[in-house]
Image (cartoon, rainbow, N blue to C red; front, side, top):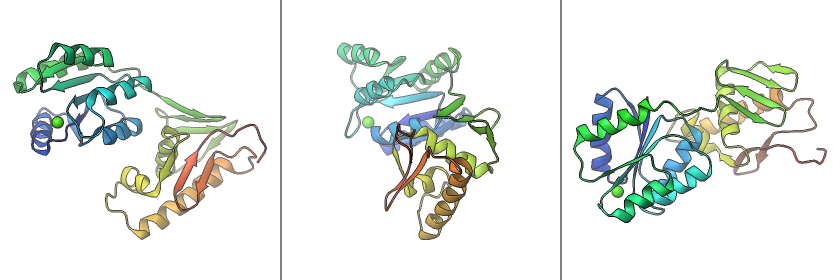
Length: 230
Ligand code: CA
């Protein structure tokens, strides 16, 4: 079970992560709402623990934005203030539960178990753009009638581009999230470019309706073709 902990106070985030890891949850921490927003768009989580007090957009705003994008993952909101209006706002924003800080860890664990018991949300098992379809269960990629013969890396790359469909994906994002190289260096940029070129040959060859686009100097974009002919 994967849990995303969104908390800017590093100490608390670390304590939470360690304690949850001890309960055999896989934990990812995000220090800001923006970071959290990005992560839930790119990865699957079974639960999000979201602190309200965050720099930039607060937890409620993040939660509203996530629900607008139809994120169904259960969200447990942590609020420092035991104010009725906070609880109401939390539930209105789409929180599944909330806990007032400071809280006892066993209580947090009990809430987490309860939320996870409600069952995994209906996960996206297929990603699509135009006539391209990626089956995340069987790891099959199909464009129109053609099954694409992708390497594991190419599949991951295509999955990532599809999850960010219509949004610009930078080499930094790919280095961090697909290659899992937090420190981006020039050699990895070259690797990324080569992989993208290979992937494009497989996905877009003989297609007038191209899906993968390079935005010079910035990164890549997967989008459904508009009605014009390329
Ligand atoms: Ca905080």
